[in-house]
Image (cartoon, rainbow, N blue to C red; front, side, top):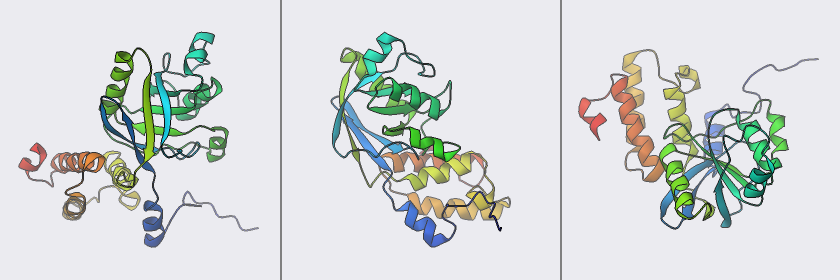
Length: 235
């Protein structure tokens, strides 16, 4: 029996396939009174976002890495729950909150980037039957501040938005994470690195919201890698 052993199994491999997959809508916006649109990306697991769905948003008790006590369970039942990243993996954090009755899970990243977290092995993700999204650090802090100002619960709405694209952030993750060139990271030769930088800069220029932040981060990365003019990093 012939067995294919490749990390690319079931992943897009040709440029056409990657372009097709990148056109899917995995991003959206959280709206709430007193908060500008908070952009998010969905995880590679969990249920789909119900367009226009409204939730009461509350903060988790602690890092949600261990089974919640009775008081904590009562607090999150039927609510969207926001919790900082860290302390345990995405699966454990989401499972703890789902088992406690949460209706959706919002993870606050440790920096301003967005990504689409996955779970290994992938079949474990089928256990998670609530929507899961990731927001940036500053946006997450703003939401948690508004929760406190509203006495512990904030009315929010989650909507998918085609303007919030995953492809920019996935590319940034590869560049920041030091991925190999064939996986989207920087080429080893400075000439090719500069060519890539200039091409991405041209493609991403003029973006708004999350795309605009991704563009600014690209400029900072270009300066760090020595392929951008110093003035660009000041934008």
